[in-house]
Length: 396
Image (cartoon, rainbow, N blue to C red):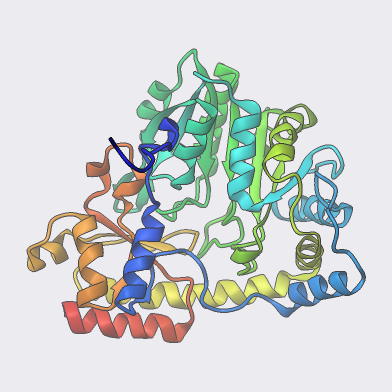
């Protein structure tokens, strides 16, 4: 006679287990390590947004928001999209407010994809992409971003080969997590041409749209000729305004595609926190100076961490956008007698007091990313300085 209950986890989730972020954060906590693994700031977001949310709560805006989002936030998103991305959209019919960009991704896939549809996915990828595709029953077709002296980029012939008669969508992320690549105009044109040729839609994750450095410029694929009517632009307030815990995201899409997104969204969360939506509206309308200050800070922490990593033997190119550095660790692990990114990321918290992420978790074939390691630089200057001090002590 057996006791207990056997695992009832749905088979669609069996390949994913616990996220690598949870594992590495647990290691960081156990060893009191400086946590450069998860991509969230260790400082607070702007008072402008918080005061807006408090004002909303004090004015009794505490009940369910409308399913698509509060009118105030949807109009603020429309203004933001026009200013930042040159996308004109109708706030009533083309914008849906979601519980972070992660829910926007899930609602888009569940609302617009059918089982068996193929989706072209660039790897390394944000880990929720594969899980959301599995929930929708869709089939990923991976295109690898290869490391070059200039950064990371895909091979055009591999991109074209990934499109088939079953391709329903391409999922892009620019600026890209974790490589830091900002897709160029020529790359977006190339992807757009394949979408049009195969009658596919573009699902564009643009959460790092304002975190772009040096002379690089973010463009949305929705601005490419023929793409506005077949693009879903996803973003959130978390990265631009350091409010990741608020989980206020959105999807911008033509009305026909928005109907599908909302059909899923209404049964996933229906609506998200009303006061926080109103706080984010204030930031989108009046928070430009906050973004400029944040960019200057990230430029400094990016340079500080990159220089120290190179000094210690890591090989890297400065990320063009986002707030991650993806570095080749092989010279370091050779010295330590270690092999893979997972080996190094499990060694670092206990021996160096620093936590990072092994990006092999973001590849369909983990071996393709096993020579890399990801560090987040979205931290206070003092946090980066302490991490560098510990890394130098352990690896120098």
